[in-house]
Length: 263
Image (cartoon, rainbow, N blue to C red):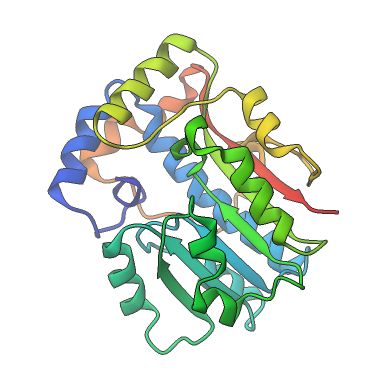
């Protein structure tokens, strides 16, 4: 679904059907999917060029599209190393095909809630040096971490393992309207997709524990160092075009987050 909103061709009929069923009630989903992907480019560019990060751990990466983390990072720092983590075996298959012959980038099949499986994976041990600063990316997956998963504990554990100077990039859907938030939670969980909307304050409570926000802090991703000259995304698919621009309706639903640094 996310890839389809970005203009990717790698999706299935079941994805398209569910997106078309969900979008009328949650039309902002098209805009915020695209805004998150544009943020990924700006975030990784910042981490590689300004923060000096050379190693990236991308939790819940999803199917490859354009300007993936390793492509952005290696555009600016050719020696960057990237480990992608996803629970979906289809992601593993697509990723391995894309990365064939690239020894500095790998996809591992793991549940990012299971940090023992992730952090002790042989490929993570091969490419990631936890004694040096790294970037941990939880991009547009925060809403898939329900309170029952202990997201604060997950973030605290992985950033506790990271060296001083490491960074956390995080984003998730937020909604300040309790009724709409509950409706979306019910819709997504009812379809078997773990989902929990949060308010801005709740996201801040997850993240602002011993970490320092990078300017401009935690914001609607539209406002995180916007760059009109960054590479554009492919066009919105025709079937979804009617929902493009819905985020400008002023209803308080957006993709929210930013980058934080470990002192």
